[in-house]
Image (cartoon, rainbow, N blue to C red; front, side, top):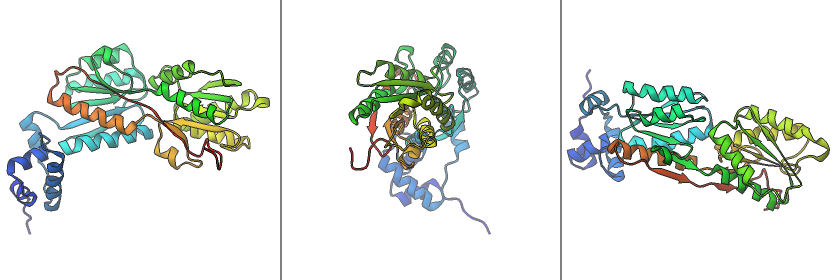
Length: 338
């Protein structure tokens, strides 16, 4: 028994559009979103698949874009990956996710490997950045978009956010609900998020605080947050903190565990805020008050920049900034409160 593979003409007939429109929709070359959805649905019904190898050879492209991050398990990167796929897939691109580790050197080596031609572009969110990494991005043979620090002064397209301003928003919220003995949990200061969130803390008006202590965690993980919060809470037990600002949601979840180990309640005794507004923070108990840095929006923006660079690699670098937004939930709000 033999089976006949569906043809492009059959897909065009099922979708009710021309053969040329069908080809454009499936190959990501200028079709509208509605057209793409219509043709993709018809192709799925018929079991039609694009011959990716032949297409790549004809167009001298891989139709693959790499998304490189320090930790593929971090929920922020998962949100970004989904958003990137959402933009690139309808245009015929596959997204290859890669882990770079937490050093600028390992990320630079990945960028250097792009000369092998295994992808048509790279979206990278480095934890640490140095001159070598920037130089490798500048001379990369394929388009590169950075999610993280703004790169307008380096001629590199980037998507950034104002996490320093986000720390300020979290502090204003805690002052507004009457918290005055506040601790700040940050991650390593030699990282992009650690340094920017430290700037936000340093720039904030602490005049309303009775005391303000800070602790640096070894990493941006739950375990690191737990250990750092234990150190912070043990520092002056006779004048216990009534709030903790964490530099990301994973640190905040570790901090809540540390608070509970002392027999204290969140938010009754200690209010806790995070940053990144991750899914795990939203479903945690108590649900976590967090500053959204628009991880989904940043992923979409980076993917759109990548598509523009794929069409015209010589266009000037572009910069996109996504602002912070505070999401107030149970970890800072007493029952019947704000």
